[in-house]
Amino acid sequence: MPVAQNVKLGEGVRIFQPDLVNMYGCTLGDKTTVGPFVEIQAGVEIGKNCKIQSHSFLCDGVIIEDEVFVGHGVMFTNDLFPRSTNPDGSIQSAADWTLVKTVIKRRASIGSNATIVAGITVGENALIGAGAVVTKDVPDYAIVVGVPARVVGDVRDRDPREMPQA
Image (tube, rainbow, N blue to C red; front, side, top):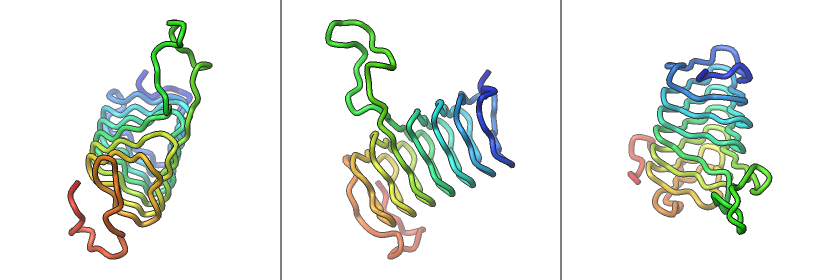
């Protein structure tokens, strides 16, 4: 079942193509929308009035506050040292790695195809450019672009229609 019974949905949540998502053990706040081909894993918390666009992946440990925009194809990670096997060659299990949480603060926007590395905080009202790879905390109101992402401005100083391209 694409939307598991253990998913907690707030009032007015819209999942545009429920047969084309994979959601389990997560929480979505009131009036949040989810596009097709999205995976939201157990432990993810999404606030109210968020938009999660198609083809995005939100793994355990991701906390998204209210009014956040997650563009198409955004990827989150939750492990700083991912490995398939242990040093002895045995397949890793849940006990063999450390979950690292990531927080996206209120009203932040994450552009399409951005990658958010585990353990960072994206500040309130921050803007992540399309294709950016975010490896460090992003201050409130910062505009970040590039690989690795770097601060190039402040959203309070710009007309949103004139934002730099990644």
